[in-house]
Length: 131
Image 1 (cartoon, rainbow, N blue to C red):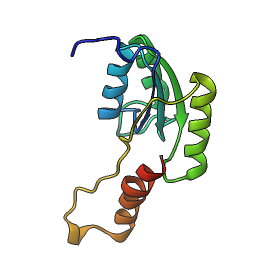
Image 2: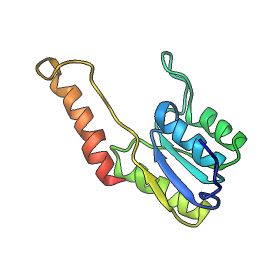
Image 3: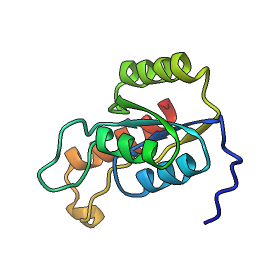
Image 4: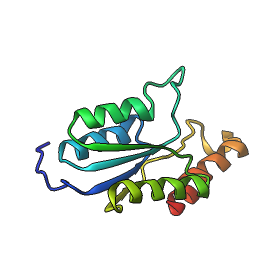
């Protein structure tokens, strides 16, 4: 993908950006000169999954963007609001929101425990709405 510079000076708030698709979006935005806010839960290394908000932030800054890593579980309104406040304080506002955080279950509907359903609903519907 070509870097157009169209995001230079814009602030992009991305949930779930410590790895995977969210991090890939963040890196592309950084290469275009954006300020990137990573709003994700992974502050400490996970035994089965690579990366944290801090390792992603280093990669984003190396790609040319400015980065603000925020520890956020989007199920909790106070954490979302704190991250928004930090973004506004550091970058002056938020221009683009990427609601990327999600929870999935590899099981079929009938085999999905209610606890898993509640987690998915709280993140995928409520958390997305709240951000």
